[in-house]
Image 1 (cartoon, rainbow, N blue to C red):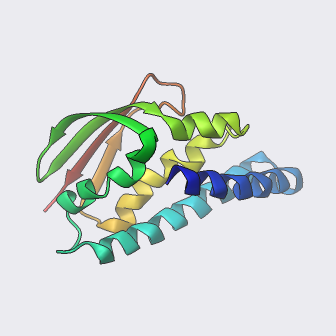
Image 2: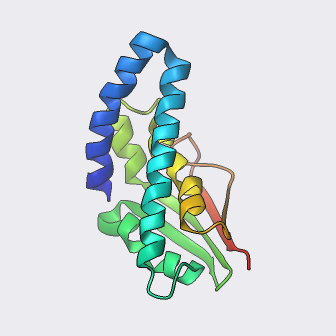
Image 3: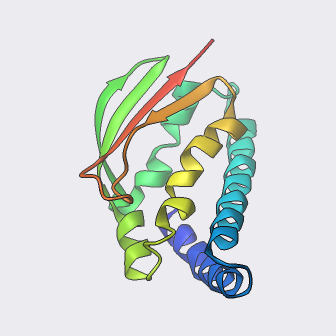
Length: 149
């Protein structure tokens, strides 16, 4: 997934620079944010459709290794039940990669922006509460997913 996001970021970097030059920074950021949000929703719909017994928090937890593979994310699980999944990301190679690519300015739009949008596409019952991210300068990302019946 990290490789995929890096390739996407290479393309979006040029789109961002082009939009910034032609339409200004605000339009460029809004366009990138909306494009990434739509992409995340569509990918989430595909994950939901592929979930063996339909979307659920358990099925969502089962695909987490895709995002953490190869140490892309290092997480500390705080709680994992059928209705709650709480963890901290203590290392984010997505953030490191975007910063190394010179994309720190929009790294949160490219990565963190996807998380809540993913919930929208996966299942409206899945909610994310997060107050901070490494991408935006925090020591860790605090994820709290809840599944509302």
